[in-house]
Amino acid sequence: MARGAKYWLMKTEPETYSIHDLEAESNQTTHWDGVRNYQARNFMRDEMKLGDRVLVYHSNAKPPHAAGTAKIVKESYPDHTAWDENDKHYDPKSTPENPRWFMVDIKLDEVFDQTLGLDELREIKALEGMELLRRGSRLSVQPVGKGEFDAIVKAAHKKAADAS
Image 1 (cartoon, helix red, strand yellow):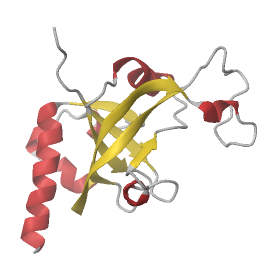
Image 2 (cartoon, rainbow, N blue to C red; image 1 turned 90 degrees about the vertical axis):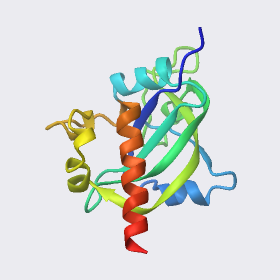
Image 3 (cartoon, rainbow, N blue to C red; image 1 turned 120 degrees about the vertical axis):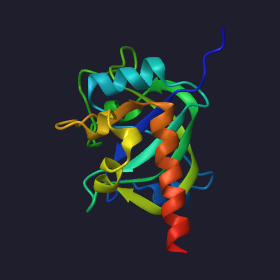
Image 4 (cartoon, helix red, strand yellow; image 1 turned 180 degrees about the vertical axis):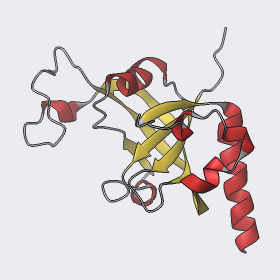
């Protein structure tokens, strides 16, 4: 039986890699490397599949915000940055023969004309149970319900329409 698309939220620090950096890539595609949390790694390694949708979320921004959407275009493969001693994501316990960390490739779908800040997300009733909005939630890759994904995209489009 075919599996339906799943939905995810992937956090990034905009000064490290923003949705605008993704937009500037030649084919608007990048590998999502450097994840060093086992639960987030497991989501990427075991559950993310081609065609799954992604909310790109800028954490450590003022304010933190949903910035746009992307799509999974390459399923899980070993994160080679873990093997590079000069990379900030280096892990001496990870080797090409026994990789510990994995990544996926994403392709830009949309950069929101108007981002949605964390406080604005908290005001959307459909997001009441969303993992991102739980106190203390710090996971950099997390599942999102289809209704949550759709509510955020709809709110971003409404905010942009209201601003124009």
